[in-house]
Image 1: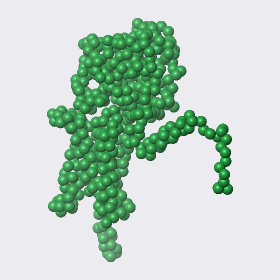
Image 2 (image 1 turned 180 degrees about the vertical axis):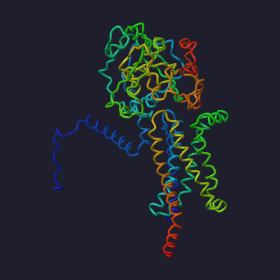
Image 3 (image 1 turned 90 degrees about the horizontal axis):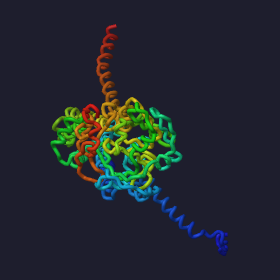
Image 4 (image 1 turned 135 degrees about the vertical axis):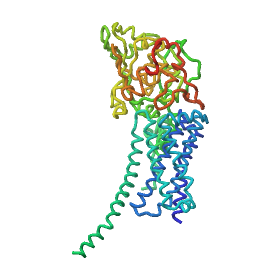
Amino acid sequence: MTLRFTKLALFLAALVPLARLAWKALHDGLGANPIEFITHSTGDWTLILVLTTLSITPLRRITRQYWLIGVRRMTGLFAFFYGTLHFLTYIWLDKFFDIHEMLKDIAKRRFITVGFSAFVLLIPLALTSTAWSIRRLGGKNWQRLHRLIYFTGILAVVHYAWLVKADLRKPIEYGVVLSILLLYRVGVWVGEKRQQPAIPAPARSRAEVTKA
Amino acid sequence: MLIGKPAAIPSSEITPKATYLNRRSFLAGAAIAGAAAVTSVAFRDFVAPSLTAHANAKIDGLQKSPFSTTEKETPYKDVTSYNNFYEFSTDKEGPADLAKNFKTRPWTVTIDGQVKKKHVLDVDAILKMAAPEERIYRHRCVEGWSIVVPWVGFSLSELIKRADPLPKAKFVEFTTLYDPKQMPGQRTSVLKWPYVEGLRMDEAMHPLALLCFGMYGEVLPNQDGAPLRIVLPWKYGFKSAKSIVRIRFTDDQPMNTWQQSASSEYGFYSNVNPNVDHPRWSQAKERRLGEFLKRPTLMFNGYDQVASLYSGMDLKKNF
């Protein structure tokens, strides 16, 4: 019951950035270059939501608030939603459906190449976000596939860093948060690796003890 | 004590009507400011534009210029609220507010290097060197957006002729004020300060090169490079140095700030050129502020009269 309420609240909260854009668009509030404003805003929120999604597992384990897993799919899907808006802004408002121009951009502009890749990697994750997909793929495979979001995070930060002219402060901020979230996973993985060979070791020493 | 005859109010306590009205408008202002602070960016963006009307002094006796375009001028509000001035902020919306209290007087410009005699000129003396003209120029940013601005000034050559450079002076270097107390952007190391730009002598002497101190018929707003800047309409915007304090004549090519920051991306010439892309993005098109679709970018931003300055040069190499 509380989870349903939390999810509803989260759902509405995640729509606020879009509502803000719509409100600004209707009230002449998007500034001198509205298309740039929309592009930057949807891009920012995609990255924020990717990082939010990546923070749920660490947060859940550290705070032992295990119910948090229940909101991860929604934050992930909202990341995909804003990523789609960001991509649509690019092909519609920026390139005006000039597919030829767009393909040239993707091949030639490395910041577009990595940004596009980050978005494409999210598509299979969005498509397999249902409970049915988890059953179909099996938990292990599903989890492996969904690790693609790590690469989306990295590519998205690189995309941001490569498009700014000189002021790298914001991409670095995102990069630091992403690094912490990924390093946590490396830490967990290393911890698990260490524990695995440690299991037969005491068995052997016990054997030695009995021999002695 | 609470219940009693109301005391007579001495006339000295009665607020004059004007003060009272002032107080009301102050309260209204405070309410707007408070609301803006509380509701953050969203609300402020609607309120601020109406509060920032033209605040600058008119410049009289403007002459029309044959160099002016007849294209539609970009609204004053856009030109003054969306521009790059890294000395104040790397956000394009930042300089308008951060430059509000920037002091543009007293202001002197040092003219030195390869000149017969070093000069330290008061900016007001420079403004009187020639009759002010209105020049409506296209202005193209290296980032891919453009504006049309009615600048006020006169040809840079008027100043250079009076500065009397030596024959061996082949280049001119412009330096922007360095004052981190007034210019918060200079407290960061986003670029190497002070900002330096440069031109070849023949570029600087070209009649299109404008020494600028106003726009839209008024004194230049602080965020657009007051009190004195240059405007080079055939080059990307960053070549047009703002808030200039020093003009130095040299015999070797100056190292301009953006070239120093990323020499593979920004060269010395930086002429608007749709055929030479920025390494990371295309320069073939631009978004004119206020227009929905991008328009094609023109060679030399449409100022073909400068082409002869670069005849025989490989503009792909000399970008």
